[in-house]
Image (cartoon, rainbow, N blue to C red; front, side, top):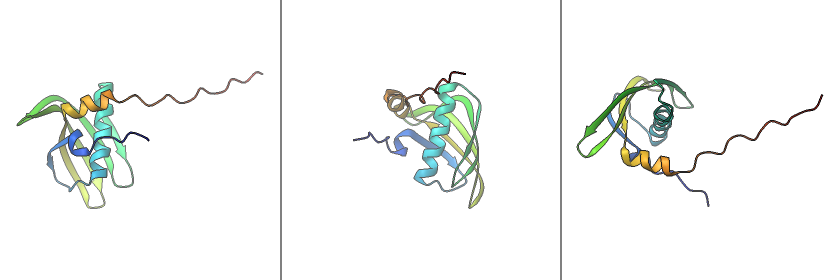
Amino acid sequence: MAEQSPPYWVLISVLFSSQPLSPTLAMTLHQAAFDLYRRGESVQPVAGDLLTGKVHNLRKDVQMGSISGPAFEAEIETERGSGIVRFLLTRQGLEMMQAQPPEPPPPPRPKYLN
């Protein structure tokens, strides 16, 4: 049985959103932010059936009550219009995601003899 990812509310904590976030949209933003966090990059475009936009790594750790983690901001365009989402990746979520085995690399391309 394939292991499911944790629910989005364990992985991401939304600080502000001018658009309502569905679970799918929250997971899309989480994945883009997690990729930025792992690679240490500043900006990553996001696109899908529900949205287009960019996620920015703010390179700051923030704390809201007992929840803390790296901060991100997304400029998104959805069917409801454009918006801004400010959120953080939770430390608990980061630990859970890093404990998961990485995705296997794609198979090597066959080598042809000429």
